[in-house]
Image (cartoon, rainbow, N blue to C red; front, top):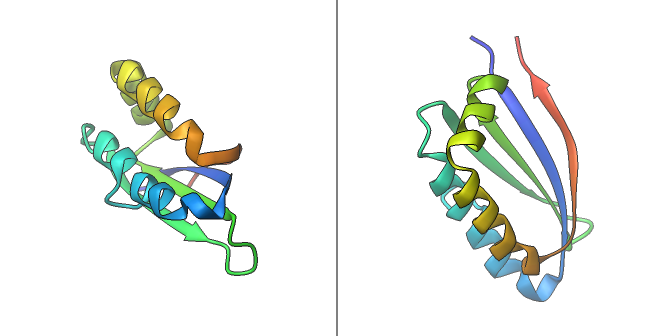
Length: 101
């Protein structure tokens, strides 16, 4: 069975790295929200060893449609958490969405 992965790049203020990691960690606030869906699989948080201000997240879902259904059902909570976390980042870039076989 395949999965659907969504990748994001974040540039952060290094002084806020602890707060950022708490929110985006596999057991953090985002993953806690995602776990409302039985179709959420896991989150990975990668920290660039050469550029301490750069992080990558990868969120895994059972399918693209499962993620879309989650966002529709939890759009208020998603948008609220997104606004709350904006102060932790200097920039946020969607690196792509990928389907595995």
